[in-house]
Image 1: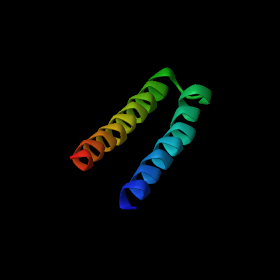
Image 2 (image 1 turned 90 degrees about the vertical axis):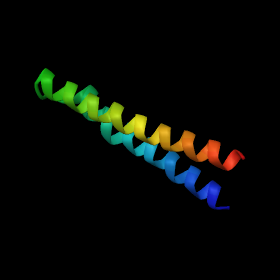
Image 3 (image 1 turned 180 degrees about the horizontal axis):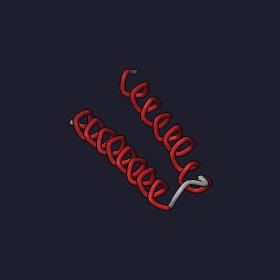
Image 4 (image 1 turned 45 degrees about the vertical axis):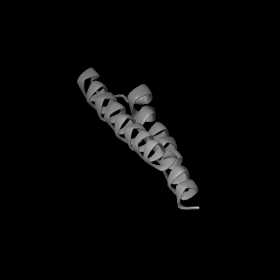
Length: 62
Protein backbone atom coordinates (compact mmCIF):
# COMPACT_ATOMS: atom_id res chain seq x y z
CA UNK A 1 0.00 0.00 0.00
CA UNK A 2 2.79 2.44 0.89
CA UNK A 3 4.52 1.57 -2.38
CA UNK A 4 1.49 2.66 -4.40
CA UNK A 5 1.19 5.91 -2.48
CA UNK A 6 4.84 6.77 -3.07
CA UNK A 7 4.49 5.94 -6.78
CA UNK A 8 1.42 8.18 -7.02
CA UNK A 9 3.26 11.01 -5.27
CA UNK A 10 6.24 10.68 -7.62
CA UNK A 11 3.98 10.65 -10.69
CA UNK A 12 2.16 13.72 -9.41
CA UNK A 13 5.51 15.45 -8.89
CA UNK A 14 6.47 14.65 -12.48
CA UNK A 15 3.18 16.09 -13.71
CA UNK A 16 3.61 19.24 -11.64
CA UNK A 17 7.18 19.75 -12.83
CA UNK A 18 6.00 19.28 -16.40
CA UNK A 19 3.11 21.72 -16.01
CA UNK A 20 4.88 24.45 -14.06
CA UNK A 21 8.40 23.85 -15.36
CA UNK A 22 8.12 23.33 -19.09
CA UNK A 23 5.46 26.01 -19.51
CA UNK A 24 7.81 28.85 -18.57
CA UNK A 25 10.57 27.33 -20.68
CA UNK A 26 8.41 27.13 -23.79
CA UNK A 27 6.22 30.20 -23.42
CA UNK A 28 8.30 32.65 -21.38
CA UNK A 29 8.97 36.08 -22.75
CA UNK A 30 12.21 36.49 -20.81
CA UNK A 31 15.72 36.44 -22.15
CA UNK A 32 17.30 33.35 -23.62
CA UNK A 33 19.56 32.92 -20.58
CA UNK A 34 16.54 32.95 -18.22
CA UNK A 35 14.87 30.26 -20.31
CA UNK A 36 18.02 28.12 -20.31
CA UNK A 37 18.41 28.48 -16.54
CA UNK A 38 14.79 27.42 -16.07
CA UNK A 39 15.35 24.48 -18.41
CA UNK A 40 18.39 23.35 -16.40
CA UNK A 41 16.37 23.52 -13.17
CA UNK A 42 13.52 21.54 -14.74
CA UNK A 43 15.90 18.87 -16.07
CA UNK A 44 17.57 18.64 -12.66
CA UNK A 45 14.17 18.17 -10.99
CA UNK A 46 13.27 15.46 -13.50
CA UNK A 47 16.57 13.72 -12.75
CA UNK A 48 16.04 13.85 -8.98
CA UNK A 49 12.49 12.51 -9.23
CA UNK A 50 13.41 9.73 -11.66
CA UNK A 51 16.46 8.67 -9.65
CA UNK A 52 14.28 8.57 -6.52
CA UNK A 53 11.74 6.46 -8.39
CA UNK A 54 14.48 4.08 -9.56
CA UNK A 55 16.02 3.72 -6.09
CA UNK A 56 12.66 3.05 -4.45
CA UNK A 57 11.67 0.59 -7.17
CA UNK A 58 14.90 -1.42 -6.98
CA UNK A 59 14.95 -1.53 -3.15
CA UNK A 60 11.37 -2.78 -2.93
CA UNK A 61 11.91 -5.31 -5.66
CA UNK A 62 14.13 -7.42 -3.41
